[in-house]
Image 1 (cartoon, one colour):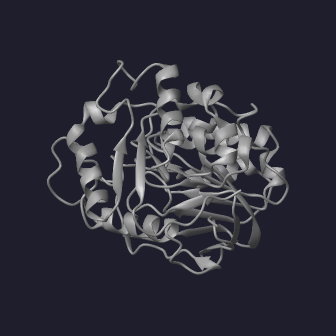
Image 2: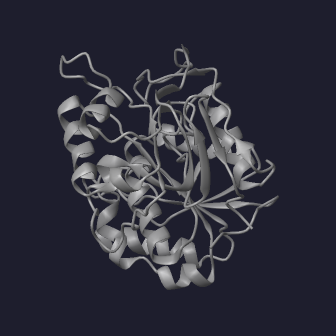
Length: 332
């Protein structure tokens, strides 16, 4: 199931399914809102705007209600996360999936919002979007915010033709600057995608933030990973010890025996624990004798800029030639 393409007079409803970013760093959030408004989008803040309940934006029921109310709002065509967090999985039992089946909308976010994106796909079959959030993505400064917006905007408005080959950004950044104080653009690093294992594969793209997936893996809210799927995974601020455990979960669950390829996103501020190893080297050790195409350091992750990727769509990956091709439109 797919939502429809959008053209003009687009309204974004902003939800906060975990962290209360509009309350904790309002300057970053408001800059994101103003940026989207400057590009012609209308913004409706969810009912938890500027609300804070300690580490979260509201109670479990309040956060679910905020999301559902934006679903029911007929003026809203896109539901976009304000940011991620740690507790989106708590609200999964309370989302109105039946309404979404009858009234499909574009749902977009990343990181902890993986829980919502995959649960919605599992429960409804609706294509969801692993892509930018209001504060963390659109609150960034140029030029990175502009490149992130271009990918999002062209995908949502359907101005690209299919098959669509993702273009590798020339530069990227993971520089951290205090969000409340940032007044300059971040450093630019030369960019490349890494062929870890060569090969060509094609299949349904499934995945998101791996650490978040562990919070609902094996439940009814996690889509079944099927033979031939292409697994997309990324993470942020983790260390070698943690991602070995995360990769090993996938191996123990038989995921690597099913998927036809892996797209590994850049890992923001990775701590190698003194090993000198990068994430894909740890993945190779966990994989062992399993040989599948792997493309690493893809730019759909916590670093900037961020490409927008639809979950559930057919994708072709040519690891040796560093190509990721979206084979179908994610929208009707």
